[in-house]
Amino acid sequence: MLTAQSAPFALVRMTRPAAPEGFARTFGLPMRERAIPKQHDLLLPGAEPDVAHLLLAGHACRNRMLRDGRRQITAILIPGDICDPEAILAHRTEYAVNTLTRCTVGEIPLARIGTLDHQDLFAILSHRLRREEAIAREWIVSLGRRVGIERMAHLLCELRWRLAAVGLATEDSFELRITQSDFADALGLTPVHVNRVLKGLRDGRLIHLRGGQLTLLDRPRLEKLAQFDPTYLELWANPA
Image (cartoon, rainbow, N blue to C red):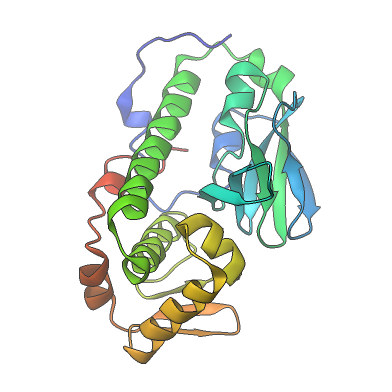
């Protein structure tokens, strides 16, 4: 059972980059890998899954769909992220999880997680949830105060930082196969506006995107445009 006990914070402050399968490895949990096609529903609201999903490869998202079909992406998930932490804590999800690209997920039986009586498990889950809250707060700032090109620049800087933390990005390059439509749903823009914003970043010699590989041609200038301060990410660097 999970109990709210204090845990050695040293376990949370691990050296980066972390391995995407680190959560399962830390606790010796069994994990079955499964390939999922892009644009596939992994979880639906109200689901009561019997496994937790650890993203091992690709990009997925959490989202909320309005009754008229409009969608808001509330989180972009990268390798190493637990797709459904609430399922571990409450055995129920209140949001949808969809794949944005082809993905590999690791399915971890919730029954096995529930048998762990280890205070560090609570520490790591709590740490991950606080990191997600910090990211969500920054997204709110983007949606409320940044204009379109700043929103995109900030999200690209954030993704590069997070992917570097799991060894999947260099100082200025990473794989990016998220569609413009998906970016629109994450940034609160239209696909046409996203296309215009990306063109502006390319014309300004800030980014280059080809064959699913994004290169930040001038990362300091891109970060200045976005007013990107990675403190909210550094404080909650990847635990396990």
